[in-house]
Image (cartoon, rainbow, N blue to C red; front, side):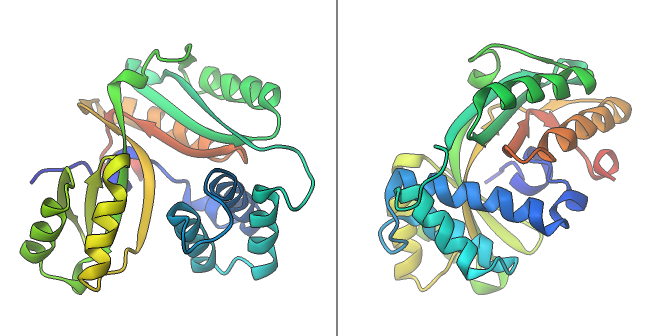
Length: 245
């Protein structure tokens, strides 16, 4: 089964920025806050929160920071209300760019995201201008050394997953948001633990671009991703390793 690589072709993460601990912890705190606000503060019953906590622990985020973020999400602590906003627009070459944010000040975020689009050779559009080019799906990542490919494929297909593919040393499983729980339960019954699980915007059709255009797209996505309010940046451009180097 063919599939897009969530890690290589869809979301460009800026490694340099992620090495700055304060910035990374800020992004993860917002992710935890949103997860706790939407599904409650118990990671045993809120899978999105569980994976957000796992992601925070994987980069040694302090326990106090994690617990404080959960309490902010559930309303136990005061502070500004965090909300999820999506921004859409076009990058170099006319490719689609979709930006997920978590912000406590939509006016600030709106102005700064628009500025980055313009600085990066693109332009921000209105709601829905490129969203129809993507599907919002769960992307579940399983370590490849944990299970044989055929066995995993049988498990996830029977559970209703859309797609599965191997990407290097991991398997990526794609499923509808409504089918996530069933896939997760089937994996758990098979004794498999996900390395990560995230909601992502996957392009319905990827668009090929030349190397120079691709590098400009990557630069724009890195600028956006470097902003504290931005959680994820997606494109329908087919980005190669040469473009991301």
